[in-house]
Image (cartoon, rainbow, N blue to C red; front, side, top):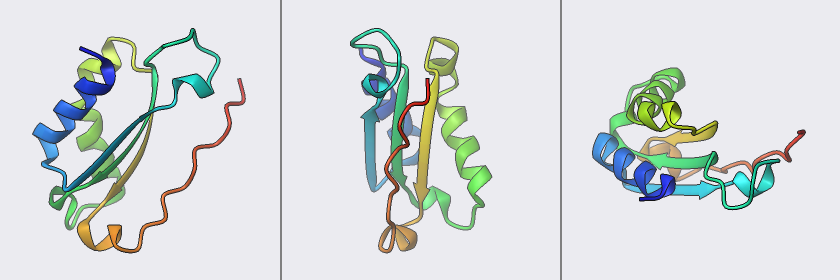
Length: 98
């Protein structure tokens, strides 16, 4: 199973998101072709209601702990409540400096 699919399955199970985008950004970095080491996730979940940003990121990191142990190198996280998502402007990822 691909890392992307594992991320989708684990975040779905942990957060029951109403919106989830998992974007493989590995090609934007100096890694071998077809790598799955750099991702961006956009997660909208009721599980984030009343939580500060650091708590949301901890939940995502916790759900993906095994993937980090197995080579996931970078994860850009954009975590929103339903209300925040209605007005969200998800930023583009910066260019790789490597």
